[in-house]
Structure formats: C-alpha cells, structure tokens
Length: 99
Image 1: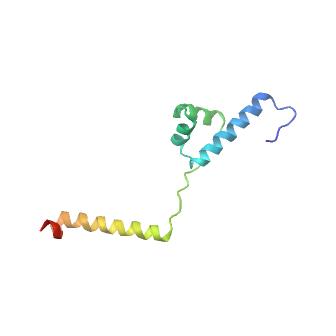
Image 2: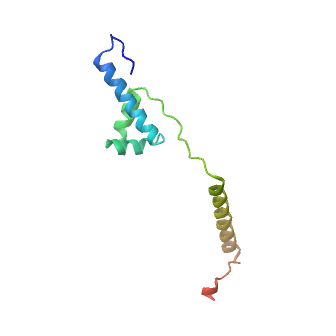
Image 3: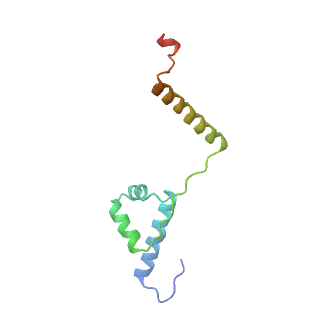
C-alpha cells in the first residue's frame, strides 16, 4: 500500500477495505452473492460497500473448457435432441428391458 504522509487513517482503512473486497470478488470470479456469503454479510451490504468504494465490477470469467469437455457437451446435446425428437415424433425406441 502506498501511503503518503498526508493520508488520514480513514483513507488508509478505506484502501484496505477496497483491497480486501476486490481480492474476495476475484476469488469468487466476481460473483457478488458468493462473496457476500463468504464475508457473512447481506448482499445489500456488500453492494453498498462496492458503491461507496467505487469498485468497478468485472465480467465473470468463465473457465475455458478442454476439447474433451467440449466434445462431451456436444455429445450430450445430440443425445438430448435425439431423445426429444423421438418423443415428439412418436418414434421413441423401447429399451430391451421394457419389451
């Protein structure tokens, strides 16, 4: 923390609070609800502090998927569509167990 000799205690405490809030928000991927839960404060209290300290809320960063995870999701989407289509068209196949 860079403190000038003319910084008041209030200025120093405000900067500490700002850094703590930003650090927690980063840990929570900028999810304010999760950050409030971790701080054990109401979401409205966290939002008031964010506003008072002029903290700019960043976009949530989605974790990138590996190519394997992407292929699994595509496969699941195709299977879900096939199932939906077979039910809608009345061509749903019975499993061997239900015959």
